[in-house]
Length: 337
Ligand SMILES: [Zn+2]
Ligand SMILES: [Zn+2]
Image 1 (cartoon, rainbow, N blue to C red):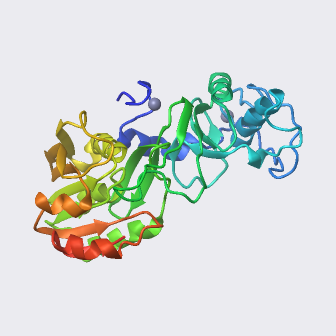
Image 2 (cartoon, rainbow, N blue to C red):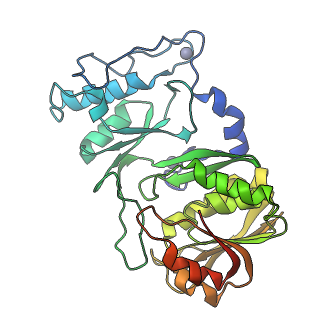
């Protein structure tokens, strides 16, 4: 599959990712042991692009990669000599799961979110450090969600300065694993097992069987795709934020081998960034019927009625209460996730 952002190989089918994920970041028999760098103390190791690299597998410990980035920032005079490793930024592995050991990174396996960086330096980092696939600059506070809080709000996005920001999280549930890709500069970072547990509760209660599910604030599509995995007959995805829907459509494609559904037609092209009246942007079929809408949820009832379950998953700072009565017009059961 071709990455829609960079045209490279960032996007792999979910089946391949899940087959390989447990070994993807594991040390080989020749990898160097844990370097035990102090991440909070001034860091003075001289780390270049070959430092710490395993001669057998070619990968290196994440701390060497971060040390390499810090050395580059200091060399440029952008960071003071006394800076510590933890000041560099937030590293996100390209294929995310709860890695039970410090990851050993191969080529293009890390997306970096940084508070303090320039476009020029970001370009140098991506060009000079093989493990880094993209550098994103954080805007605003860490607690501020990326995307739109509501359809009237100005979108809050981070800025992709260099490389590619597409990465994926492997989501595990009792009814299967999925890969959820996202453009990390435009989609809210969140990973929350309690959401999955709520869906597992619905699944164990048999509520997905033959059901029609509305994923009302679908983001990159996680809950709706899990509903397909759980046995829903039809899943309607909706979001007002177009970049989220582009990721949803990509995720339906990527997981098609696992879920037995695929996109049949798609048209995101002409849409505004923020939706209003419902526009059907994609349709799919297979084991379940799929509809993807770009709409303000308040207007979605113009097109969507008679669902069995509506899932409401708003940003942490948005009170979902206002949406419950609205969603009751469209679905028998409304669940705040
Ligand atoms: Zn890419
Ligand atoms: Zn190795």
